[in-house]
Image (tube, rainbow, N blue to C red; front, top):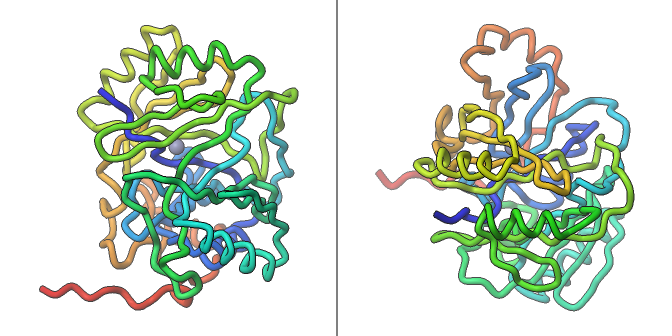
Length: 312
Ligand code: ZN
């Protein structure tokens, strides 16, 4: 039983329109699902993915308009690392982000920057057999596109207990330098434990949690294992596009174990993902009201090529 790398990463934005502009237009990701927070349907839940909405590519945001800016600290993910193909891709991104007024820092094999609300991002050239998870975009050539998640950086005050849970409970493999990888049959993803700098403050521009991918039939066993280690997992919660179990690892970082299905085509066809507001069935009667409350978002169709027509 192995976790299949990162499933998704969920963060907070105070400004949905700017968030969509940055992730869908500037970074060239696909807004594959536009839905609401299941616990608060007046708040958007936006999902930016590859073309297929694949686990391993999915950065999601809750929108709380006007939310205060957060600050990452101990017990929080403070950087999201995406894979790119090579140094030419880093050249492309340094120029493109510079043209958008985004400050970047280049290192051999990596480019660091932040989103408009301060969320730490990095593009890294990674040697991997994993399939690149790429979105089609009129703005970003395919050879330079983001290829899915490589890692998260998480700040913890003491890496020892976190490392023990990663290794002994969750089956991560040590890569060295406080980096740990979950690798399954399909894909790998890693977490790099970095020193904590005092407590963080949740809010706009911070990560809420990181989800690791599990096979549907193994989720119950994972939950048992986490419970057996005294980590107090939640019950399995049906998130409609996947099923989730949450717990905090010893350093305070909120982890989720999310199933690799059923996926985003559960309620709309692949070629039209994210075009309209998707509502869980319980909230469908509120559609008219919610569409008035929720912030209007840019139409991402203008940044995307025409859908690939089915040959059938
Ligand atoms: Zn989640």
